[in-house]
Length: 65
Image 1 (tube, rainbow, N blue to C red):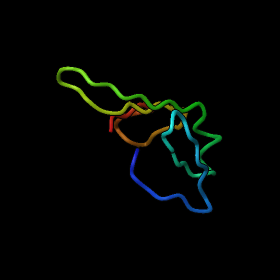
Image 2 (cartoon, rainbow, N blue to C red):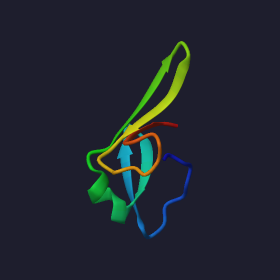
Image 3 (tube, helix red, strand yellow):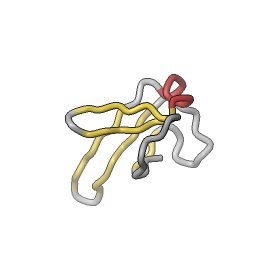
């Protein structure tokens, strides 16, 4: 899931192309590799997040947020 958040001591900050991403340190190793893409097309606009985390949600390891 992707949300707006402020980092704390339990988070790792990753910056790419001037965009800061925050992820909990205890999840980082399990989630690698992580990819965040943004796409805009007819009928679909938003972020796609892919990682190696095993999801308990209905969307599996790829979610559009």
